[in-house]
Image (cartoon, rainbow, N blue to C red):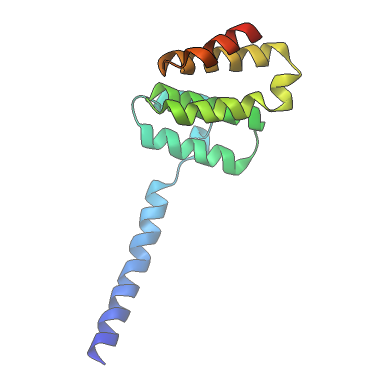
Length: 130
């Protein structure tokens, strides 16, 4: 029975702490923007990831833009394979395929990824697509 009360006490003590922690980690609405992701990419990577996650959850931006922004976040912090996946996903979207400017933006990023990863065959395929 003593074990039951200890467990109950722990649970009751944990609930306010987890609420306070969630409230402490909450991001103000004014900071949830595409620009903020770029602003915090190098100075506070975790915050930039949280902002990116919130942007995806809100769904106010096109998927193409979200993929590009998150790809830039990963590329600029050395997570090149993750960036490559997101850029390829962005390239598959109608927003990129139907607008030559958007397609060029994605292709340039893909070429940078392939160049960084020394994937010369893929890079030359992208260059021929340009």
